[in-house]
Image 1 (cartoon, rainbow, N blue to C red):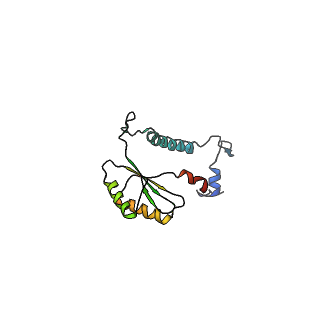
Image 2: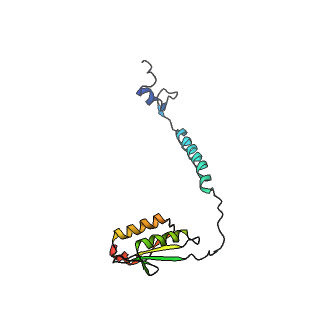
Image 3: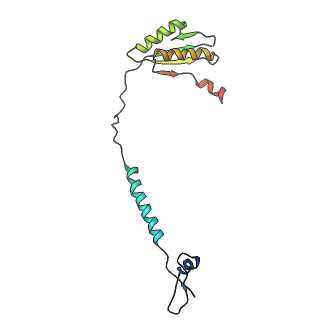
Length: 154
């Protein structure tokens, strides 16, 4: 019988068996541990790389204790359902609003502006007021009294 060339199916199948002295084939009783060792090395390398990333700390200089800053003045701009503008309860027109917003933005105390639009106010008016607030350069703006609209939305 001629020897089979390497790489054929029969040669690959015979490689799994050993030829004892008797001449027959017996299965190899040992497990090939090379893939197991390869996987263990990959896992060890992954842990070596990942563990320092988890324990890495960034030093941050956090303030200690509560140090209250100065109280900022708060101005309230209300927009009523009929389209009137109220600055701290005082009615004013669009031109006067722009002047107030410019003075508000120039104030070194950095006051807060609380915008309180009525639920029935026209969106177009609220949009114009927000555009004026942005053009004036107001950086501290908050919307107040919005909790009453939550039941209508949900």
